[in-house]
Image (cartoon, rainbow, N blue to C red; front, side, top):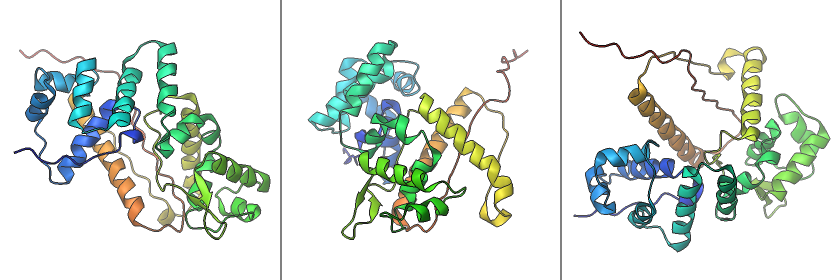
Length: 283
């Protein structure tokens, strides 16, 4: 008997593979059995192995398969158009076409993620834009720019705080409540899979600098730093990345449940410390 599929908003993604992975995971966490062979049967894909190749970027999705997955996920007409554009954006090798499809994704004004994407060079240009946006959740901010500037660690200048608040309002990431105080329109923003862009790379570098500064700036009970160095093969690495995606999803749910009184930065970095060692032949 077919189970009812639980939706995950397609508009929160620019990577269709991540969307599908989260879609399957979201349904499994809600007690909906997801069997990959059943998925293959529903979308008329040749085998579980081919589905795995598509999900891991080793094979592309055809137009027919794109339409089949849109139907499988019960996407409405506009959502299906978005999903199709997302597939084209992910799979094209042409820079000019990728730019074209990205602009089409941005044109779907359904999520704050894409309001950020449309102006990411402005939003991610300064580390404190995201911090001030988070402050708006629990601090009464209107024209008290100096107070806002001094709340940040490290503090910024009054005019920088003012310009930042004006930018957040212009990007429709914050709006005035009934008392005239700025509040975030959404509590959680994802980069939409564009961590390779120059603007976000600069932002991440700035936040890693802040992490280094935190070693001396905060006492031990105010910072939590941990690390692990491990060896993995390709399959283990993909499984590890899925665990990171699951963690990020749970953090998003956690943020929705709790009221804030302080802004925290959480950095997760995964990078190689060695070259790939060739598999040894068994004797």
